[in-house]
Amino acid sequence: MQIPTILVVAGIVFLLLSLVNIKGIITPKTNRKPLRVTGGILLITGILLSVLPDLPPVMATPTIVPPADTVPAPDEPKLAPAPCSPEVNITFPRMDEKLDGDGTVDIKGTASSPDFQFYKVEYGAGEVPSQFHSISSEHYTPVIKGRLDTWNTGALSEGVYKLLLTVVKKDGQSLWPPCEVRVFIER
Image (tube, rainbow, N blue to C red):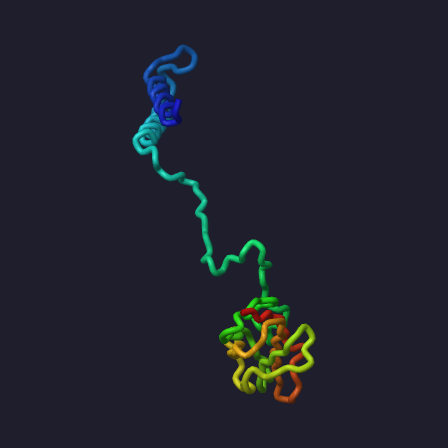
């Protein structure tokens, strides 16, 4: 028997019970309103479910599907920003990010300090670069959660590179440590 049918039958039974006298259980003095209300609810629910069988479940949990470009492939590790200080950090590219070697990359993050003078973004080839090269000139305006620089990767060969963000204070000393992010250039 289907659930709507069971509900209709149960509703009818409750309504009939509210009309009859059963010795010792339902007497003329018994409040019959709860029986009528319960019977009516069951009857109406059963009829509605039998007439509208394709209603979606009321308690269904919505499925949220993120955009395809934010879902990592099953074999790719989840990437995270480099573990740097809040004043000196690169949020993009993230640590171990694979970058297209045929274009430009916006480097994003924060470069600020109460006694800020300038910041610079540099790159070096290899796991332990022997030297770093400036991506552009020094920047004299602090950046908070924004674009730090644009890196042209078109002339670089494939491989491991380190990005280095350094903030220099007004006394000429750099905030320590600088933020370092390892990336991979691929074609």
